[in-house]
Length: 244
Image (cartoon, rainbow, N blue to C red; front, side, top):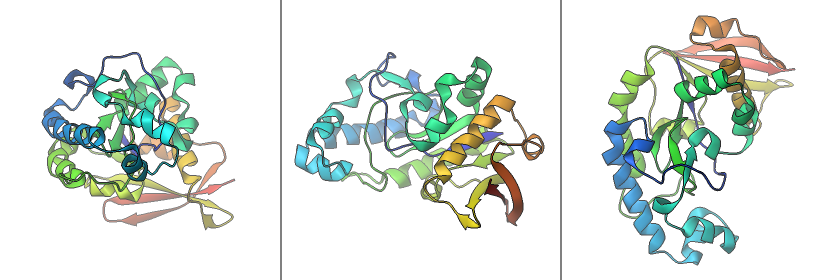
């Protein structure tokens, strides 16, 4: 059972591992596709002014733009699960997990990056910026990844999937196998931004409990969450959770 998770706009600086190369990634069969996107990205960044990058990155702070204007090919790397920061990843709190829970995350979390495509949590990536919805001038990255990752993901993901991504990432890959998603309610209303926190909390509890099947998942109790109902449509079960 694998867990699909969206990336975060914010990233941790630094790293201690080898700069960008094929060996940093688990899904080596799609490296040619990834490398095509990365080459276009690097060329675009190097040929753009800070003012142009400010608009493309969605950043007003030009000093921050300078950080992301440096070539990602020369930057050190770290695990994707550690590189991404923000609400969901704060809730997972990977660095504070026990080693077996970290291993669970490394082996079972699949992340979707606008730049790197599909990643395992333990893939080594540099600090970068690619605002969701931005596009490179000479390449349709979403279309390219969609055309080239489906075969590999269908095989890798297996029979059961937990999909905790934002709907945007369906553009890259939409599971056809039995899938569980979540909806979080507070006082009867669907939460939006803070849904990221509860998605991260679900991942953390799955890792701590070493959950490997839907059957095990359905018996898992998560603090401050209570199952309200199960909605079913085609291959998808949505667990509607009350925040208590």
